[in-house]
Length: 377
Ligand SMILES: *Cc1c(COP(=O)(O)O)cnc(C)c1O
Image (cartoon, rainbow, N blue to C red; front, side, top):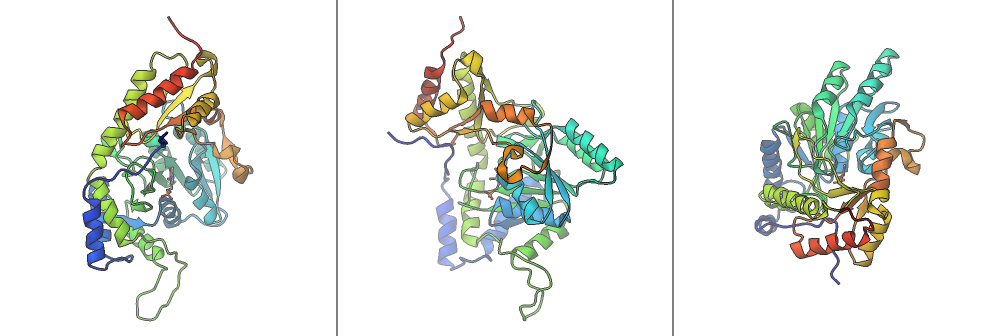
């Protein structure tokens, strides 16, 4: 029984040629033409200067640092996300303030954010930055979020790690915040096997991040350092993979969207199965296909469905466990939280690879259907 995975890499036709070029020219380090080109191609797609890094987490870490986040600061982030969004807050000695999701997009709730910043401004304790996550390939409602943050002059970092290719009101996600982060981890829409990209409105911020990403070596021949750096640069070989992957990005997005709409069609008649929302403000890549399983109407729980899938050698996942429920973050402040808790309790991420066959998807659907003990009509 061949395993059906949640999300696997899906190569195009040009990656190998680019990688061979890197080998043939012996450019296997963190300098090289593919690295420059990969940054240039991402820049022209999103419309901002870019620096290629070893991971999305590194991009968030350096992004927060260029925004001035440091010891004793606070940074707002959605509670419903992957832990990599928020770990870099603590790398910098700062602490998160979590905010609940809105139902409309499962992303950061703009009203709760407005309340928080209003209260904090009144007591002169504004957070240093706000992180917005575009979850599962769906853009957050950026306009109200950016309006609120502009009013209080709090910079926004867009975590677009799960959402390269998604559009909000005609513009790519990751193009509006002061800083944004993308990931090319092996399970994202496109991959370099591991990698990330940091972008910023201000070129000097991108240059600063590039400087820190290669150990912050001061100009001159002596290895002199006046700032703390990291080894966070992407390699030329992995950038070569990324260039090939960028050429098939729109195809991969189309395929992921097709997977989601097939699930929607084939599960539509089951009571108590609710697809993740597709808010009309954006074009959503549907990186992962997620559904809520409402126990009373469906006649089985989300966990029953996950066990049945596992028995068929099919990988699935709950929707992210909210950060405010994590032992790691138990002391952090959280505004609201019940929406994220409900999404976590009922939400399931189904196999969503762009390379998944129709037959594989039919097997997933049949397994889910067999769990439903209620029938309408
Ligand atoms: C994957 C991911 C990251 C981190 O990216 P890596 O490249 O794996 O370090 C950050 N935020 C979110 C929301 C992610 O899904």
